[in-house]
Length: 191
Image 1: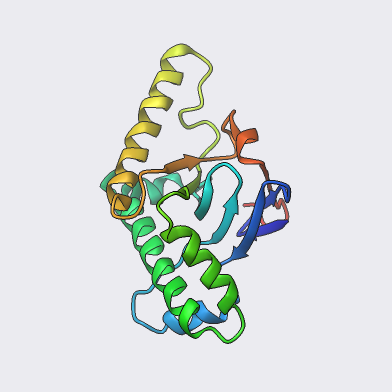
Image 2: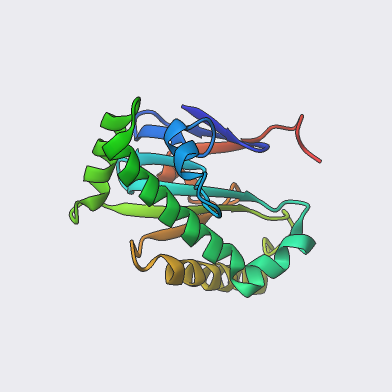
């Protein structure tokens, strides 16, 4: 299945991914809760055979590093993702009770995420400038790993109420094959 967020196109392998939905676009149930001032939403929801049910938030900061650096350094970005997961969870509960078109879907999702034996994962898909922390020498690789760990821990701090399975990924990661997805850029939308 293919889902798009901004200029990023996500191709999910149907043999490992199911129940995928572009949560914040055209979702009737989200539009109901969105009326509450300040409500936010993750971009995608879906179930993966290894990682369980996944909340996926996409941020593309390529070529926008300067204006987004403060959001990352202050932790505001990770707080925002935590709020989006919180609000998506509220929408799942409301949808499982009151949806007129996806009630069965929401009930299935809610059953899965409330089951302690099922994995629940939050992914922040964070695209940054290609030259930032993606060096070729050992020092730059250590810096990249350290920075990723700091960001992941900041995100975990916001999501500990729900799960400790938190990942920050990008199209430049070498281990994306375990996620059974490919990401490409829609160059017609590129800057």
